Image (tube, rainbow, N blue to C red):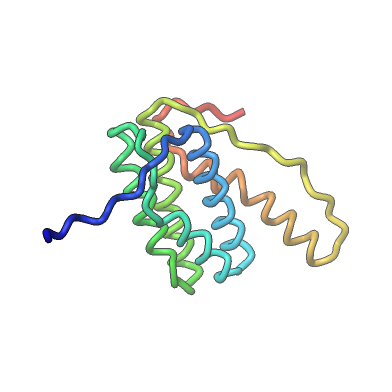
Length: 150
């Protein structure tokens, strides 16, 4: 009796917009965890983003960018240095921005209203995170790619 290879799971086509929305949400969760110093959440979200992408219909040109994204996410898993995690997140954002530049697509970035500043520490931190968000987004988009600020 000859040994036969184990059957491979079927890979279902996925809507690319759905995949990008999932990746963006995970990247935002990583960013939020980094800002909040929540390394447990950061590691959980980075682990999920670092997993292989079980999609059969990805454009070949995306491969190096997705590999860069996954590689940056892997470096975040188990990282407890804020500086190294911030650098890893910058690498992750750069991989995303480079892919968007290559595909000439502009990500839809949701803009949130300014949080109230009631003077307590919680709202102060929320306002600080809100202030930092556009800076992180702007730094992740190469200046030569035609993105326009609004």
